[in-house]
Image (cartoon, rainbow, N blue to C red; front, side, top):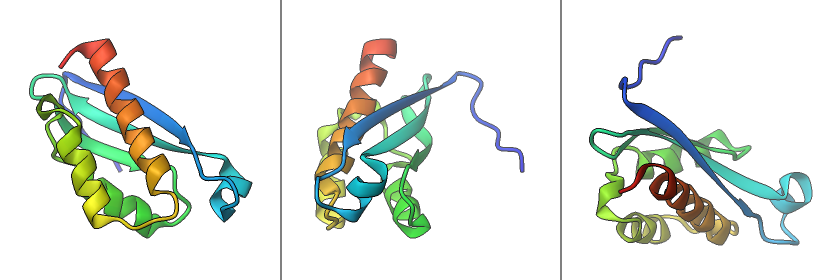
Length: 109
């Protein structure tokens, strides 16, 4: 299966430690997020999260895909907080923020 991305797209990632004492921490230690961003528009055109459960990954991707990073990260984080109740939510938020920070540092806003 071939996926075509905009010619001016970039890939950025962010990671955060999972909460100690959770099953995910014992097995994986960190959660990661990868965004593919169109530099012309700053839109997240695709994403993935390093979760074992496919449904968790799909739901989180549905929240971030289509978001324009030039709006800042706070509105996106607020939406994730509002719609997700996970033991690892803090780590997910931190991984998204880390990914956004890497994008801004590397490509501007």
